[in-house]
Each structure stands twice: as C-alpha cells, then as structure tokens.
Length: 171
Image (cartoon, rainbow, N blue to C red; front, side, top):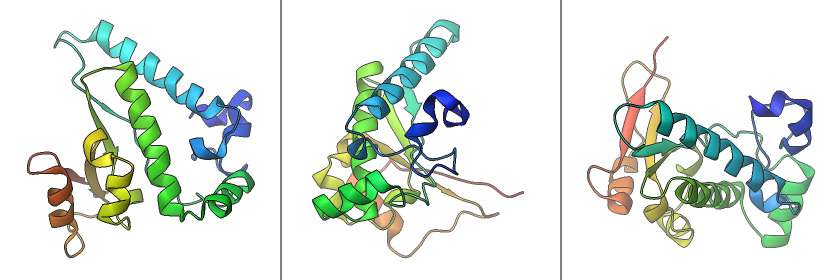
C-alpha cells in the first residue's frame, strides 16, 4: 500500500506496479531498508500497545508474489554485477528484511510467505541464513493445500518440524 503514495513511488521495482518494493540490494540510497524499518517499527508499536495478549511473539513480513522482481533497471544491474538469479535477489532481500524485523522486535519469530523461495536450493537458503532468520508459511490459492514433490521435506530438513506453517485460500 505504501508504494501507492507519491513519496515512495520511486522505490517500486517497476513503476507501473505499486505492489513490489525494489530489493534492498538494488537501493544504494538506503531508502528501501529505511522504509522497511519504519513500517516494521510502526507495526510492532501498534501491536505492542493494543494487544492484551502480552508481547508480540511473531511478525509476518510478507516477501511474496514479487513476480516483477528483476525487471527494474536497478535490480537488473545488481543481478548482472553479482551474477545473481532473481531467486537470489529475493532471498537476499528477505534476509535483510528479517534482520530488520528482529532488530525492531527482538525475540519474535519472523514469518515469510514461501513462494519466492520455492525454487531456491538448500545451499542458497542457508547461505543467507534464512533457515535461522525466518519460518516459511506455505500458501497456495487452492481449496486443498497441495505441495510440489519434496517441498515439505526440504523445508522440514531446513527448518525442522513445527517451524513450517501452511494455509490455503479458496474463493
């Protein structure tokens, strides 16, 4: 939503799409990381003061459905310079956002949608320490949750039993 505002429009991955933030690695100004920090600070503060359940124990940072990732000029330059795939750029951004979330709410479990890491290898996920920074939430737009062969086992191998979340939506 924030990318619909003119003040933040320049931080979009693609100018026409207000749903995708440019990855942190493609932002030399630090504005993307600053925006993530400010949003997370506000979310944590709002929940900490209004919840009667006690301290916030988890925070979901999204990081999903960035299908235009790699189409922005700055991101393409980073992909080329670092010899990264789009998946690697997504993982790098996810790890940075997770670290910021942990700074904003120490001790909280950081949850992320899993779709942008489904194609990642175990080594790619571990290289960015995502197996220690986040817990994945598998989400599929179907009536019954169905996963690709080996996906749940790979996630369980990475995160352990009880640390992989799931859900489905059917309209």
